[in-house]
Length: 127
Image 1 (spheres, rainbow, N blue to C red):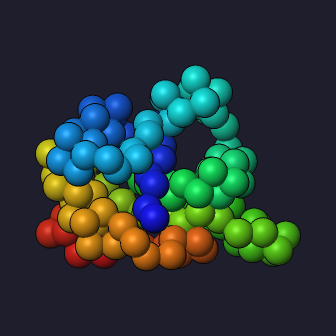
Image 2: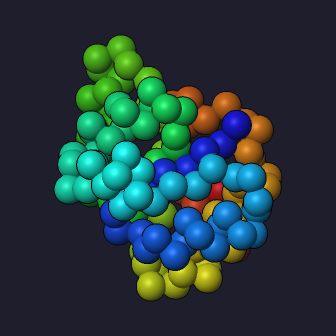
Image 3: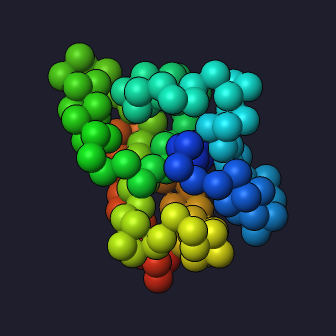
């Protein structure tokens, strides 16, 4: 089952609005997850801990996320999934657009196996 962890570049408002759109869905902002302990932590560490909790990371950070993903794979470890959002497709300030796209993804893919899966989120709601 899909459980989302929104990285620190995504507003807490997104988590709250996605939960309203899809009651019962587990959506956490990293600001609130583990009492904010992982704010300003490397994505590699976040991916490792998120995998232990079956969380899929939602991130805008395309600069380093794939390096961290490859490092984890080279260690023979898994990650809980990654949803990559491109700022050119859905701006970080477009909370409504991101909520809509994540809502669509959750409705369409919530029962999929997200272990080691990576998708690019599209504004139209296509992954």
